[in-house]
Image (tube, rainbow, N blue to C red; front, side):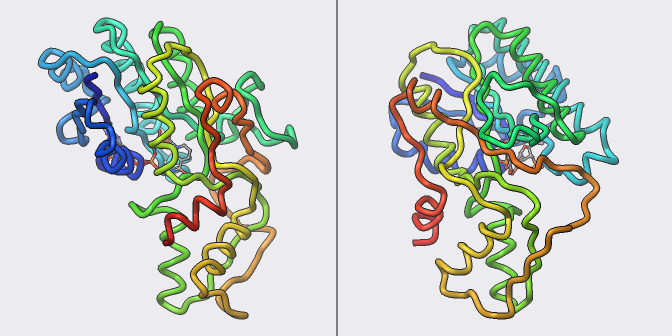
Length: 280
Ligand SMILES: NC(=O)c1ccc[n+]([C@@H]2O[C@H](COP(=O)([O-])OP(=O)(O)OC[C@H]3O[C@@H](n4cnc5c(N)ncnc54)[C@H](OP(=O)(O)O)[C@@H]3O)[C@@H](O)[C@H]2O)c1
């Protein structure tokens, strides 16, 4: 089984690389942006010309939700047009594409967990660009999985988890919003979920939600990180119900993950439990 991983220097790419050590039968090619730029047709052609992949995990994306509001062109270039090019090459080469998508394709007005069939209606540029990427994958690739996930964090990169730990270390007060509810998802668990799908080789293509279980506000998430690391004090965490951002975000974007669980016989961990595994 030969597997191409794009965006190998991102947090998910690095978590897949870590998880890969337990999948010795799989032959991975971890491609950083320098080796494979998904915006460049030439770059994609070159890598497909020299290799025959069974699967391509697209972990490459424009992920700066705030910046995307004023940089629409580049967000769409990567998350939609780049994905379109990648999808074409996967289809032409009989490669199953696993595209990673987001809870931000929803507007958050439903008020209960989103299933795979719920109507999409992104509130921001990032969500709209990721949704168009999903649509290209569905149109172009017969063999595809679209995995929607939420609030990714890990030991790698610039994410909320690392920011909370940094503020605590520096003795600074962090003010965190209670405005949005979602599910923090350990990117290491997402990496395992992706490899579980590949290992199953079940060809049960389509859209799947994958996140950890339960729900939280960003404030709850920060409080849990500080509590589990014995760093919560009376002064280092404050809550706000109004945190100004450029990009609008869904108020409630919890994902219903039963389809993934029932199809692949794997239940995701509760988000607090998964956090404790990362911290210990
Ligand atoms: N982070 C979240 O909270 C979250 C939530 C829901 C869904 N997701 C989705 O999960 C996936 C993984 O996200 P992540 O958190 O791992 O993101 P990340 O840490 O920002 O990693 C994205 C990677 O993509 C690379 N990249 C950007 N443009 C590229 C291009 N044109 N060609 C090749 N590589 C390119 C980046 O390269 P450089 O290092 O050179 O910039 C980076 O290494 C993405 O599809 C994202 O949309 C993320």
